[in-house]
Length: 150
Image (cartoon, rainbow, N blue to C red):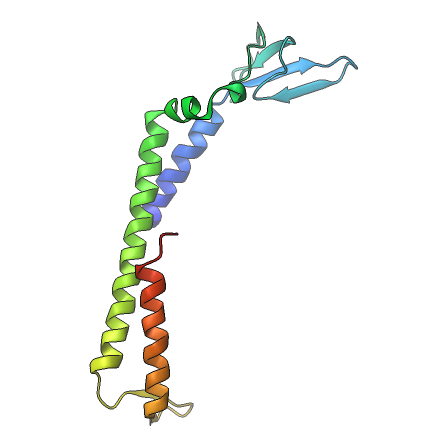
C-alpha cells in the first residue's frame, strides 16, 4: 500500500516537475514567473531541470478561460491512471474498515463472557449495560464505515 502511494506521489511530482514556467516583465519593470502569463504580454519560456535554453513566445489565451468540462477531458492518461489507482486504494481501505467493523460487531453479538483486561492484567468481565453500550457503538461504526460515501 505504501509503495503504491509512493509511486503515485512520484508520478504526480514528475508531472509537476515537467510543467512549463513563463517569465515576463510587467509595466513597472518587475520580473514575474508563472505557469500562465497575462494575455498580450511578451513572455519567455524558462526551461527547468538544468536545461536553461529560453525560448520567447507571446502569451496565448489562458487555459483557465476554457470550459471546465473541456479541461477535465484534456487530462493526461497518466493522471487518469493515477486517479484511478488512488480511488481503488480508497475503496479497498473502506472495504477493510467495513469488514473490521462488522467482525467486531459480530464478536460482540455472538461472544460469551466478554471481558476487558484490567490495569493489573486480570480479566474484568463486562456487565450487560457495558456490552449493550459497546454493541451500540460497534453498530454505529458499521453504519459510518460501510454506508459512508465520503
